[in-house]
Amino acid sequence: MYQVNENGFYGEFGGAYIPEILYNNVKNLKEQYLEIMSDPTFQAEVDALLKDYVGRPTPLYLAKRLSEKYGCKVYLKREDLNHTGAHKINNTVGQILLARRLGKTRIIAETGAGQHGVATATVCALMNMECVVYMGKTDVERQHLNVQKMEMLGAKVVPVTSGNMTLKDATNEAIRDWCCNPEDTYYIIGSTVGPHPYPDMVARFQSVISKEMKAQLQEHEGRDYPDYVIACIGGGSNAAGAYYHFLDEERTKLVAVEAGGRPFAWLRLDPGTKAVVEGIAPSTAGAYVLVIDPKDCRVVTPYPFGSLPMNTGAPMTAAVVEDGGDVGSTDVSALADLQLVDAPILAAACPLH
Image (cartoon, rainbow, N blue to C red; front, side, top):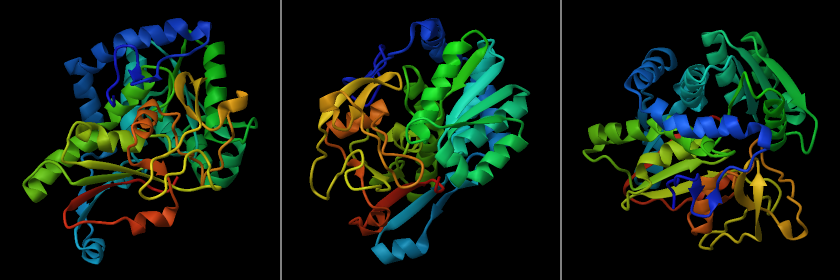
């Protein structure tokens, strides 16, 4: 259920619920993305940029003091050492090359804390393409340094004042822009959200993280899998990349950790219990996902710690939660309280957004 089917569903979640004006864009992308991504010349171009421009592979670092404290081996996958300081550029490099293949000349994006916005502005500057980034007004104010970086790179940053003025609302405004400019505009989504094929496409571009993990673990430990992969979850891209090549690995347990906001914001998962979700609503940001308390047909606004709520708006994450996986909202400090065992554990390090 964690692999997408031909209609864009992870189990019962996903799909493409979009305005009619975007139908052709999404349909064309759905029909062409796998063919383009499997083209050897396209893949060679992506690989070259990841190596020479982004700086991959990123190191797999044995955190000795943390390992000593918990009596196990804890490795950190240093995605923070990528160009632009996060994993987001893995995806933007791939998507802008894909957009160019599709003949698009204008790029739009959403951003929460600004990491994806900076990564998008960076590749647009590299390719000399127009760039517009939508960012919630709340995030513009608290992540002003990233706003300055985007503007320095030539992007136009549009503050969004609807809703709670964070990532979800920035995504809505970006989709509205796309509706108004469907012919020349390509929407680079940074999270594993939105209509199919975006969740799958983002996960595939980010899968370079777990691909490298396997090779690096083989070198360090003589085996290509860890006992645990621990990843932060906000929009889902970091976790999707870290999990991708371990989804069918029965010897590896996948653990997702998200900063807690107000009590019961989105989902709560207490230790040893299964997440309880009160309902499901379709067509949130273009896909069928989990939401909070939709009894009155209203999606409750989350109050996350920082810019990114626990994103069961990501179909893959929603499928994991529904299946009772170890995905849920927890306190930031709770990560230090995880019961670690005497075995290699691999954490996907992602800078605080």
